[in-house]
Length: 283
Image (cartoon, rainbow, N blue to C red; front, side, top):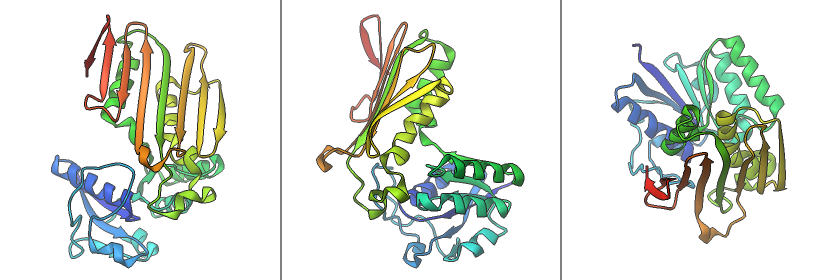
């Protein structure tokens, strides 16, 4: 299999997370290698692993890449023109995702673009059309589809292992991100609605299909959405940044099947539990 040359643009918390993920993939035997990085801030091009975010990624490396071995670009044009780059990970701010994705696709690259893909459906359709024209792969990085407990839940739903779903609720809550001013500018980040709530919105649609209707109540930074399906009586998701900084960050789901209840809580030691026949056990 031909080795895939990976380029990452945007070296904040998420860009560094992508670097660590590609390194882990290569160590697991996947044919990929980081060949180029790009950031307008030259201080980010030294390969250091320091960045702030809302989750502990487990990455403790002080040096994520060797700038002597990886091409380091401050100019996006030179980065996109680099023939060694086959796949681009876009980890820049949300309001630049569309521009970066279009430029990468025009350069004939495969694209993995951090969520949210865009701030509006019109912009998202522009990217989808550009990907069709380019004939390359363009994938939004919706990580919950790959999170082990969420992937387990998807398999259980698809297999009908515990009967039909009767109720599903998802909660994703934390304080307003304080490591950068970007998130408080809703015109750029989309607020918790677009940056945070999108995780569960995507996962619900992936599991249950397109709802026949949705109703949301709250604000851009803290809301609850009801998803209406003909065959599932109760599907809701709550997302928000309204919590006090001492609250931390949590994500949870409770899904009731005919024959069991699946319950995930990020804050528990046994994060995923399955209750059936009156007994709960860790999965």
